[in-house]
Length: 45
Image 1 (cartoon, rainbow, N blue to C red):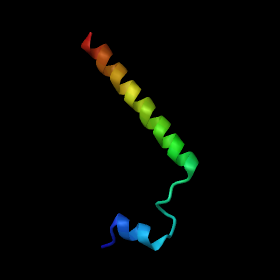
Image 2 (tube, rainbow, N blue to C red):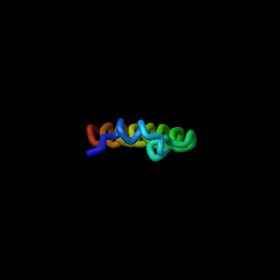
Image 3 (cartoon, one colour):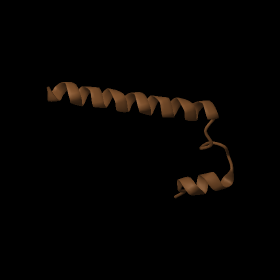
């Protein structure tokens, strides 16, 4: 069974993210975190 580290070691490029994908994932995670906080705050009222 191959682990993620094993896949990275072969340099096949599958797990190497494009810089735009990194930016998109950061923005998406930030937006999801803000939405989760808003839902928690609105449900606490």
